[in-house]
Length: 159
Ligand SMILES: Cc1cc2nc3c(=O)[nH]c(=O)nc-3n(C[C@H](O)[C@H](O)[C@H](O)COP(=O)(O)O)c2cc1C
Figure 1: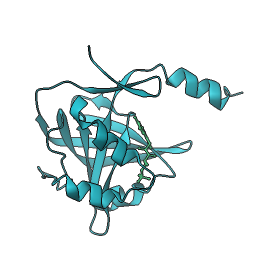
Figure 2 (figure 1 turned 60 degrees about the vertical axis):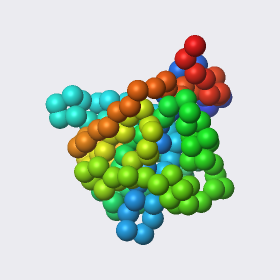
Figure 3 (figure 1 turned 120 degrees about the vertical axis):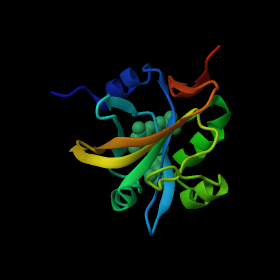
């Protein structure tokens, strides 16, 4: 029998993580979604994953685009995290306002992120109430800085 949702969530809340925004742009829809469920998967080939809730509005656009970018946020990008986690903001307008660049795949890259990984969709696997997106990393850009962290339902920073 599975653990209760509240106990499960409370155990996950003590997992300290970084914060990423997954950005995407299909021909008909662009935006971004804040995630903490990012992980590396494989070195050769270079694969990464993130988990996307089935009630997110991003799935179809990412699949249609065939690519996405993982932007690992710096501590200065807390507001960007909040904006892309918002249930009410227009994510296309938020993305547009950040004047994103592109690298290889055409996925939008958020300037000033600590790292951006430009990915081609490799697999999308159904897992419970989430989709697991696996991406093949085609290009990366990195910068110096301090990471935005998430722990115990709050943003944190390295001290
Ligand atoms: C720190 C943080 C981490 C999050 N991690 C995830 C995640 O891993 N997967 C996910 O689907 N949503 C995650 N969310 C929630 C989404 O960002 C949020 O539901 C967002 O509004 C979805 O946007 P969309 O429906 O426009 O795609 C996270 C939110 C925050 C603040």
